[in-house]
Length: 248
Image (tube, rainbow, N blue to C red; front, side):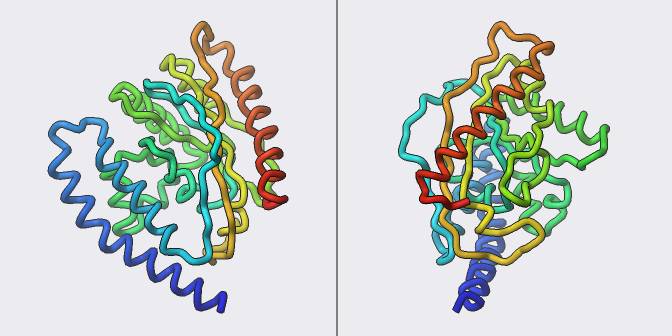
Protein backbone atom coordinates (compact mmCIF):
# COMPACT_ATOMS: atom_id res chain seq x y z
CA UNK A 1 0.00 0.00 0.00
CA UNK A 2 2.81 2.43 0.84
CA UNK A 3 4.37 1.79 -2.57
CA UNK A 4 1.06 2.54 -4.28
CA UNK A 5 0.64 5.74 -2.29
CA UNK A 6 4.21 6.74 -3.14
CA UNK A 7 3.50 6.16 -6.84
CA UNK A 8 0.36 8.30 -6.58
CA UNK A 9 2.28 11.06 -4.78
CA UNK A 10 4.84 11.21 -7.57
CA UNK A 11 2.12 11.07 -10.23
CA UNK A 12 0.14 13.97 -8.81
CA UNK A 13 3.32 16.00 -8.20
CA UNK A 14 4.37 15.62 -11.84
CA UNK A 15 0.86 16.45 -13.04
CA UNK A 16 0.79 19.60 -10.91
CA UNK A 17 4.09 20.70 -12.43
CA UNK A 18 2.92 19.99 -15.98
CA UNK A 19 -0.42 21.76 -15.53
CA UNK A 20 1.00 24.55 -13.41
CA UNK A 21 3.72 25.62 -15.82
CA UNK A 22 1.49 27.13 -18.56
CA UNK A 23 -0.77 28.73 -15.94
CA UNK A 24 2.22 30.32 -14.21
CA UNK A 25 3.59 31.47 -17.57
CA UNK A 26 0.30 33.17 -18.40
CA UNK A 27 0.20 34.93 -15.03
CA UNK A 28 3.85 35.93 -15.45
CA UNK A 29 3.17 37.49 -18.85
CA UNK A 30 0.18 39.44 -17.55
CA UNK A 31 1.76 40.69 -14.32
CA UNK A 32 5.43 41.18 -15.31
CA UNK A 33 5.00 44.78 -16.61
CA UNK A 34 3.85 46.10 -13.20
CA UNK A 35 4.97 43.44 -10.70
CA UNK A 36 8.72 44.05 -10.66
CA UNK A 37 9.21 41.87 -7.59
CA UNK A 38 7.27 38.99 -9.21
CA UNK A 39 5.17 38.75 -6.07
CA UNK A 40 2.05 37.45 -7.81
CA UNK A 41 3.87 34.81 -9.86
CA UNK A 42 5.87 33.68 -6.84
CA UNK A 43 2.80 33.46 -4.63
CA UNK A 44 1.01 31.31 -7.20
CA UNK A 45 4.04 29.04 -7.38
CA UNK A 46 3.94 28.51 -3.58
CA UNK A 47 0.19 27.82 -3.74
CA UNK A 48 0.86 25.11 -6.32
CA UNK A 49 3.20 23.52 -3.77
CA UNK A 50 0.46 23.70 -1.12
CA UNK A 51 -2.04 22.07 -3.51
CA UNK A 52 0.49 19.32 -4.22
CA UNK A 53 0.72 18.57 -0.49
CA UNK A 54 -3.08 18.48 -0.18
CA UNK A 55 -3.20 15.76 -2.85
CA UNK A 56 -0.43 13.72 -1.21
CA UNK A 57 -2.03 11.12 1.10
CA UNK A 58 1.29 10.45 2.85
CA UNK A 59 1.91 13.99 4.08
CA UNK A 60 0.09 15.97 6.76
CA UNK A 61 1.62 19.43 6.92
CA UNK A 62 0.45 22.21 9.20
CA UNK A 63 1.25 25.66 10.54
CA UNK A 64 1.81 26.32 14.21
CA UNK A 65 -1.25 27.96 15.76
CA UNK A 66 0.79 30.56 17.60
CA UNK A 67 0.54 34.00 16.06
CA UNK A 68 3.62 36.18 15.49
CA UNK A 69 3.58 39.74 14.20
CA UNK A 70 5.47 39.68 10.89
CA UNK A 71 7.26 42.88 9.80
CA UNK A 72 5.33 44.91 7.24
CA UNK A 73 8.55 45.45 5.32
CA UNK A 74 10.92 43.02 3.59
CA UNK A 75 12.91 40.64 5.76
CA UNK A 76 15.30 37.72 5.53
CA UNK A 77 13.69 34.46 6.70
CA UNK A 78 15.96 31.64 7.86
CA UNK A 79 15.07 28.07 8.78
CA UNK A 80 16.60 24.76 9.75
CA UNK A 81 16.72 22.35 6.80
CA UNK A 82 15.76 18.68 7.05
CA UNK A 83 14.63 17.59 3.58
CA UNK A 84 13.30 18.72 0.22
CA UNK A 85 9.88 18.61 1.87
CA UNK A 86 10.79 21.78 3.79
CA UNK A 87 10.06 23.73 0.62
CA UNK A 88 6.51 22.37 0.45
CA UNK A 89 5.93 22.93 4.16
CA UNK A 90 7.22 26.52 4.33
CA UNK A 91 5.19 27.38 1.21
CA UNK A 92 2.11 27.13 3.47
CA UNK A 93 3.07 30.43 5.11
CA UNK A 94 0.71 33.19 3.91
CA UNK A 95 3.26 35.50 2.31
CA UNK A 96 5.73 35.44 -0.57
CA UNK A 97 9.50 35.03 -0.29
CA UNK A 98 12.18 34.47 -2.90
CA UNK A 99 14.17 31.33 -2.19
CA UNK A 100 17.87 30.62 -2.42
CA UNK A 101 17.97 27.22 -4.16
CA UNK A 102 20.58 24.92 -5.65
CA UNK A 103 21.23 25.69 -9.30
CA UNK A 104 20.52 22.05 -10.19
CA UNK A 105 16.83 22.56 -9.34
CA UNK A 106 16.61 25.33 -11.92
CA UNK A 107 17.70 22.85 -14.60
CA UNK A 108 14.68 20.59 -14.06
CA UNK A 109 12.31 21.02 -17.02
CA UNK A 110 9.08 22.87 -16.16
CA UNK A 111 9.82 23.01 -12.43
CA UNK A 112 13.00 25.01 -12.96
CA UNK A 113 11.21 27.27 -15.43
CA UNK A 114 8.60 28.05 -12.78
CA UNK A 115 11.32 28.84 -10.25
CA UNK A 116 12.83 31.37 -12.64
CA UNK A 117 9.45 32.93 -13.40
CA UNK A 118 8.81 33.16 -9.65
CA UNK A 119 12.06 35.10 -9.21
CA UNK A 120 13.83 32.55 -7.02
CA UNK A 121 17.61 32.76 -6.71
CA UNK A 122 19.99 30.06 -8.02
CA UNK A 123 23.27 29.43 -6.23
CA UNK A 124 26.02 26.92 -6.93
CA UNK A 125 27.40 25.52 -3.71
CA UNK A 126 31.10 26.18 -3.22
CA UNK A 127 31.43 28.68 -6.08
CA UNK A 128 32.25 32.17 -4.84
CA UNK A 129 31.19 33.88 -8.06
CA UNK A 130 27.78 32.24 -7.86
CA UNK A 131 27.41 33.19 -4.20
CA UNK A 132 28.30 36.83 -4.89
CA UNK A 133 25.72 36.99 -7.70
CA UNK A 134 23.09 35.30 -5.53
CA UNK A 135 23.62 37.88 -2.80
CA UNK A 136 23.29 40.67 -5.37
CA UNK A 137 20.05 39.09 -6.60
CA UNK A 138 18.81 38.87 -3.00
CA UNK A 139 19.51 42.56 -2.43
CA UNK A 140 17.58 43.28 -5.63
CA UNK A 141 14.54 41.35 -4.32
CA UNK A 142 14.65 43.17 -0.99
CA UNK A 143 14.86 46.53 -2.76
CA UNK A 144 11.75 45.51 -4.70
CA UNK A 145 9.98 45.01 -1.36
CA UNK A 146 9.96 41.21 -1.44
CA UNK A 147 11.38 39.07 1.36
CA UNK A 148 14.08 36.43 0.91
CA UNK A 149 14.21 32.87 2.28
CA UNK A 150 17.56 31.17 3.06
CA UNK A 151 18.58 27.89 4.71
CA UNK A 152 21.71 29.04 6.58
CA UNK A 153 22.93 25.46 7.12
CA UNK A 154 23.55 25.35 3.39
CA UNK A 155 22.49 21.71 3.10
CA UNK A 156 20.05 19.28 4.66
CA UNK A 157 20.79 17.63 7.98
CA UNK A 158 20.91 13.84 7.81
CA UNK A 159 20.17 13.16 11.47
CA UNK A 160 18.01 16.12 12.46
CA UNK A 161 20.80 17.82 14.39
CA UNK A 162 21.30 21.45 13.48
CA UNK A 163 24.40 22.04 11.36
CA UNK A 164 26.56 25.17 11.72
CA UNK A 165 25.01 28.30 10.18
CA UNK A 166 26.80 30.18 7.40
CA UNK A 167 27.14 33.96 7.56
CA UNK A 168 25.50 34.93 4.26
CA UNK A 169 21.88 35.41 5.37
CA UNK A 170 22.88 37.50 8.36
CA UNK A 171 25.33 39.67 6.45
CA UNK A 172 22.60 40.27 3.87
CA UNK A 173 20.12 41.35 6.55
CA UNK A 174 22.62 43.67 8.19
CA UNK A 175 23.73 45.29 4.93
CA UNK A 176 20.13 45.76 3.80
CA UNK A 177 18.94 46.93 7.22
CA UNK A 178 16.10 44.40 7.37
CA UNK A 179 14.97 42.05 10.17
CA UNK A 180 15.67 38.34 10.46
CA UNK A 181 12.55 36.17 10.77
CA UNK A 182 13.51 32.74 12.16
CA UNK A 183 11.44 29.71 11.13
CA UNK A 184 11.59 26.24 12.61
CA UNK A 185 10.43 23.04 10.88
CA UNK A 186 9.98 19.57 12.38
CA UNK A 187 8.83 16.29 10.88
CA UNK A 188 9.97 16.83 7.30
CA UNK A 189 13.00 14.57 7.68
CA UNK A 190 10.57 11.63 7.70
CA UNK A 191 8.72 12.97 4.64
CA UNK A 192 11.70 12.65 2.29
CA UNK A 193 15.08 11.74 3.76
CA UNK A 194 18.33 13.14 2.40
CA UNK A 195 19.60 10.94 -0.43
CA UNK A 196 16.11 9.63 -1.15
CA UNK A 197 13.34 10.78 -3.46
CA UNK A 198 10.78 8.42 -1.95
CA UNK A 199 7.75 9.91 -0.24
CA UNK A 200 7.14 8.61 3.30
CA UNK A 201 4.32 9.06 5.78
CA UNK A 202 4.99 12.20 7.78
CA UNK A 203 3.37 14.80 9.94
CA UNK A 204 5.29 18.07 9.83
CA UNK A 205 4.86 21.56 11.18
CA UNK A 206 6.43 24.97 10.60
CA UNK A 207 6.52 27.65 13.28
CA UNK A 208 7.28 31.34 12.84
CA UNK A 209 9.42 32.81 15.62
CA UNK A 210 9.52 36.47 16.71
CA UNK A 211 11.53 38.68 14.34
CA UNK A 212 15.05 39.72 15.28
CA UNK A 213 15.63 43.37 14.47
CA UNK A 214 18.96 44.50 13.02
CA UNK A 215 18.57 48.23 13.64
CA UNK A 216 21.71 49.65 15.20
CA UNK A 217 23.82 46.64 14.21
CA UNK A 218 26.70 46.62 11.73
CA UNK A 219 28.46 43.93 9.70
CA UNK A 220 30.74 43.50 12.71
CA UNK A 221 27.75 41.90 14.44
CA UNK A 222 27.31 39.12 11.84
CA UNK A 223 28.67 36.33 14.04
CA UNK A 224 26.68 37.38 17.10
CA UNK A 225 23.47 37.66 15.05
CA UNK A 226 24.12 34.30 13.38
CA UNK A 227 24.75 32.51 16.67
CA UNK A 228 21.78 34.12 18.39
CA UNK A 229 19.46 33.08 15.57
CA UNK A 230 20.79 29.53 15.53
CA UNK A 231 20.27 29.20 19.29
CA UNK A 232 16.70 30.49 19.00
CA UNK A 233 15.88 28.00 16.22
CA UNK A 234 17.54 25.10 18.04
CA UNK A 235 15.59 25.76 21.24
CA UNK A 236 12.31 26.22 19.38
CA UNK A 237 12.80 23.01 17.42
CA UNK A 238 13.25 20.97 20.61
CA UNK A 239 9.98 22.38 21.94
CA UNK A 240 8.18 21.84 18.65
CA UNK A 241 9.27 18.21 18.50
CA UNK A 242 7.90 17.64 22.00
CA UNK A 243 4.62 19.33 21.09
CA UNK A 244 4.30 16.96 18.15
CA UNK A 245 4.78 13.91 20.32
CA UNK A 246 8.45 13.30 19.56
CA UNK A 247 8.29 13.44 15.73
CA UNK A 248 11.64 14.38 14.19
